Structure formats: structure tokens, C-alpha cells
Length: 76
Image 1 (cartoon, rainbow, N blue to C red):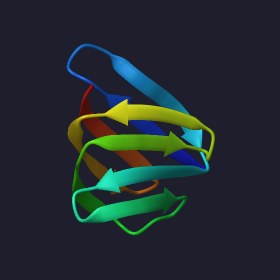
Image 2: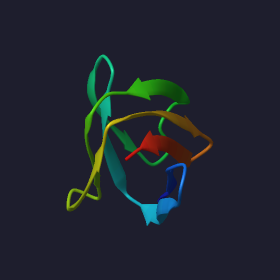
Image 3: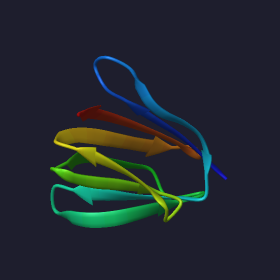
């Protein structure tokens, strides 16, 4: 499992253990699974999809994934 935290300037949008998170990267969409290689990326407007079922729309943001922990900072 991967620990995912999605934060906006006003609130914690999502926090919990997930199997997958699908992100709208600035160079294209990509998926992060457990034990993913370290990554830092900008995000463009689109939807973050958590565990292939929950969708969270974002305007822009960034993601950092390291050591099975993924932190996403977004503008909602």
C-alpha cells in the first residue's frame, strides 16, 4: 500500500492508504503504485483518480513521491 496525502491551501483533501493514484502530469498522465521510484512532477488541470474509483478535480499542483509516501499539493 501507498500512503497518499492530497493538500490544498485550505484543507486536507484526501489522506489514507491506497493501491494506486492516477495523476494529470504536466507532460502527460501517469500512475503511481506501491514502491514506485522517487518522482517529483508538476500537475496540470485534470482529475486525480484514487484506487480507480474516486475522482478529485484539480486546477494545478505538484506531486512528490518517495519511500512509499505520495504528497500532492493542489489548487482546487
